[in-house]
Image 1: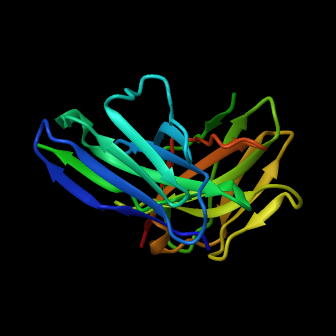
Image 2: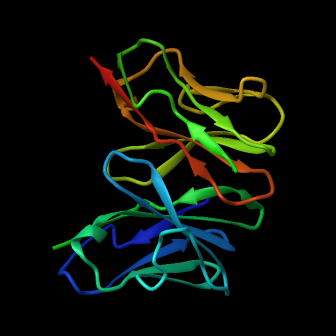
Length: 116
Length: 113
């Protein structure tokens, strides 16, 4: 099956620093990648949708200058949380779809971000 | 626009008992339907999906779900649960031909010995 990886799986950083999270599709070409945020005991909240080679589309209320998304290749998308603050602490999950797998999303294992 | 309602936030059940996790959706267009499972501190794993064809879909670990168009439901069932089924379950819909997936709030299944 299609495999999506995320790195790092967890990260702790100081307030004011920036953190980059990578999302990779390992065995298929992901033309579309999605970034979600999940608060404890809650559902996934879609942050943005990115298509390879174009700018990401952000959901309402998500600051695009705060959460920088790059989808430069068919196997890699990155989410950079800039000037992180404690309220950015969350579980970030990416998913990918593409090619003959266009009608299904494959999820990464998630990244736990803790901002001190 | 689509929406998903999972009617139960928590479902406690004893081991080897049957369980049903309810999911209703609303949509003005045709949709694909999914159930995902999430174990603590992990991402989502696809449990089963309905894209077309038979309205009853099954997973390899004994779960099944039936698409009921008239009732706009996609309830998840298992005739006999195990302790290892304890997890969060999310129902999701996406429009056919589109990408955006809408998730329900999730149902925490807690299987007791």
